[in-house]
Image (tube, rainbow, N blue to C red):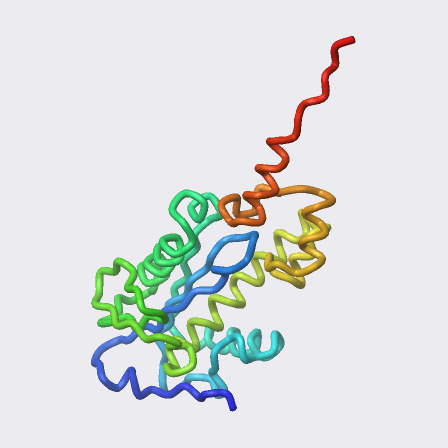
Amino acid sequence: MVETPTFEIEDQFEGPIAGVDEAGRGPWAGPVVAAAVILDRANAPEGLRDSKTLTEKRRRALAAALWKSARIGVGVSSVEEIDQMNILRASLLAMARAVANLPIAPAIAIVDGNIKPKLRCPAYTVIKGDLKSMSIAAASIIAKTTRDRMMLELARDYPNYQWQSNKGYAAPAHRQALGLYGVTPHHRRTFSPIHNMLYEESSKPLLSTSR
């Protein structure tokens, strides 16, 4: 049975409360995207859940409703930043950017996970928060749908990798395309499979052209 998030955690605090979550820590390609959402409780759409428990169609419908009713900030960390600072630090940076991009400053941010990003407001972490907090569940939906849209745009330029369906994750079609077409500028070079592929390529002996 899927756990239903509530406002129980939010009720511990006063003032504008932002739920914060990210999407895209695991894929081999594409950015990591975070969202910060301040819900209007009176107009919050029904059926908010952890984005991973929803169908794509339902996620899109809820995201559209949230963009109309909630205050939202989105933050992105690029592939270059992921490779420079590692995926955890890049995820925390995306979260900080998402909170900074909110149209109003929150009194507190409720963050999914157990590590606080560096914010200008106090932060409260919740492990598996997208299953417990309505605000974090909303943020998970915005982060996921925003990143999915970005991967769809990248897929138009790199159709062989089928990012429109696998979103950069380690799907069989993605693995096969890497073997056939190689690494793109949107692949995370510090992730083991990509790093190993690049190392193998660089270790191949050069063919001699001398006679």
